[in-house]
Length: 65
Image 1 (cartoon, rainbow, N blue to C red):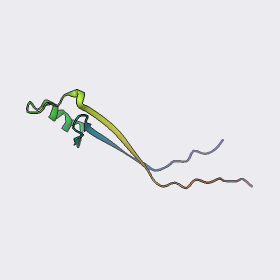
Image 2 (cartoon, rainbow, N blue to C red):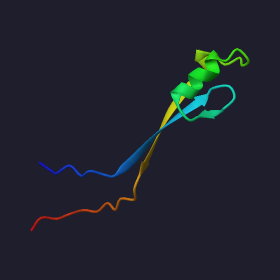
Image 3 (cartoon, rainbow, N blue to C red):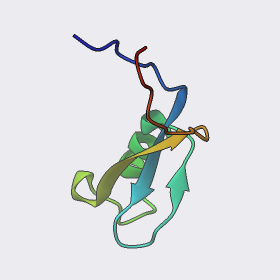
């Protein structure tokens, strides 16, 4: 059985307005926009993306002696 190699990665959640592309700092900030009667933002405008950055990894074959 081969060993599992852990690859360092960083995950970032991105909250956006579907129609305008506006990026919010958090889901709470989006909810404040929805609750604001001066905007036409609705819960249907919610979009959440996950960005994953992986550090550079060198792949190579290992041989057993």
